[in-house]
Image (cartoon, rainbow, N blue to C red; front, side, top):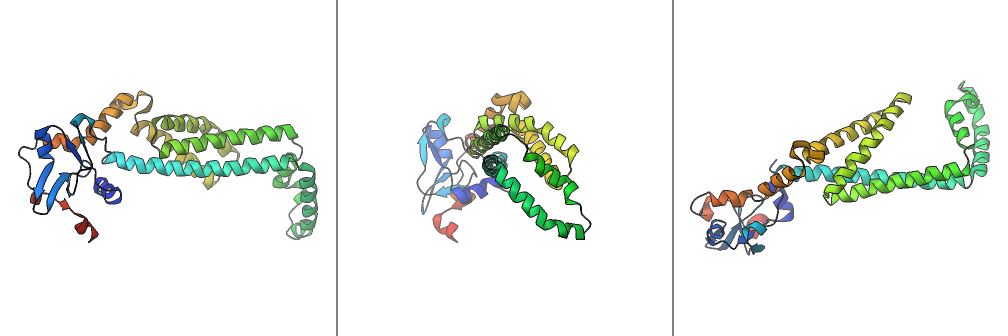
Length: 269
């Protein structure tokens, strides 16, 4: 997949007019239908006015190629974190409501259990000794203060998840560190839960979290991996200015008919 042209088709081209005359000529072309400027992302010549200008070293940092793919993955993780945060907030609210009405919920549960007992006995199922029923009954014995602390912990966890989601969506580097640290911290707990009860949801969640941690560390060069932050910024900067660097060493300016020229009319068709 050509991530550069795909992104340009969705967001528009990124053109820039450097102040340096020689470099400016290499990125500029005159056509019978008007001026054309070379896109810093996809490299095609684009008809119309240039979007920006200034010194070459102040050209906008335009993400290209693999960086655009990384954006898609990070924003998928952001959506997953946001959805998880909202669900945890709802669960925390349910725990808080339950903590304030344990006795009434207990009575309602026992009344409903009495109604379902004949049906369970018909299928030879002992509700009084059911593991699920025993677990629910144990929750009725929790102190109000204990349930409140559980609800508070869930709210804190949900806030962390939502902060991660916002940071990842905005492509903030601190959010990548927060995601790795927070996700890795809960991996032992998820592994312990797998020992208690294995389900496809738990397996998929554990696998997704492990892949997310490994991917973000390696791809984003966190914690000094593959050269660390300096190497990551150097790679990002060199890739964003690749078209300018190529144009500097390309020799004489290319004629517009030698390149793929975009125009609003052509794109409409």
